[in-house]
Image (tube, rainbow, N blue to C red):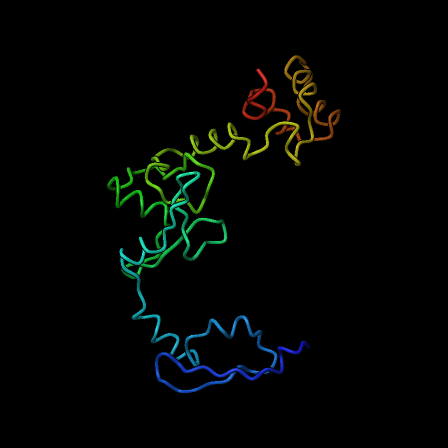
Length: 196
């Protein structure tokens, strides 16, 4: 146990006004974030807790060098901003796109022109398909392809040899130490697309 484990800290519940202490062993940095004395008050507090569009814009920080509008609110574990408005959780970049450009077309996502996931600048956003998103990521070297991928079992030379060979997939799979499906996909160009 550290010294901070023995520091008694008291807070007042935002819902019922009762004073409550930090339990022994409860991390002090987490206790400082607590707003309610228990689950009952926390649940009651959440049913009325919601943000507004003004709250959304207040959490955007314009970064002058890149032009990005950095989201300063809650981040999802994947790095994209999120905010609860109208009882529903919205991704910050998608909400910004909808507020500035209108509804997102069916079947499309909101993609970034910049490489900054927390960015919500509508000038950096456009509607596109998942395939466009992946192609963009490959072009900007955000996704490693071919030999650069940590999962690659083949090399560029091996793929060229596989495509030139008439041997069955199973024979080549044993020769190169990978699956028959990996050989087939490399041969027909489903994978290793960067090699002509």
